[in-house]
Length: 190
Image 1 (spheres, rainbow, N blue to C red):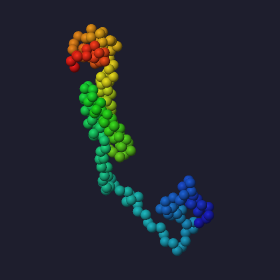
Image 2: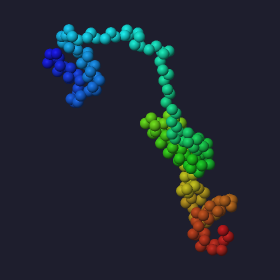
Image 3: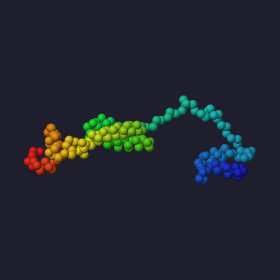
Image 4: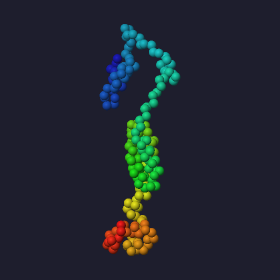
């Protein structure tokens, strides 16, 4: 074999950074290049089978196994999300069920994205419905938690009591101005 041909073959057998390639690929490359001059004592190459015999027909192929279903957090996320969306009108139920649905949906979607689970659609469904329940529940609960937009906001105790028309509104006035109410009426029944 000529030195130029050997160098070209060796270049083909190394990667771009100079490390050797798979030894089996190297053997195949050497067979493809072959000797420069045939020697009389070498055996002729073995006869190759015709291309049609080498190919398998679709009916003869082995059945491909489907990957096993790997459920992650999709089903719990979807169940919690649907419950959160269905009960969000109550306020707290939407918040309490929506928060774990969002967490489980996010974790399940990440697992499905990294091919660790096969239920990515259920995870995303749980994430979305959990967000709907969480946001709607939080909107309903917000005024209760922070007292915004209630009866008697910004009024004094006297003004609030003058505007109240029911026992519920009077109780709201009392709770908003509790210190002043207790000073005025120290013996008032709770």
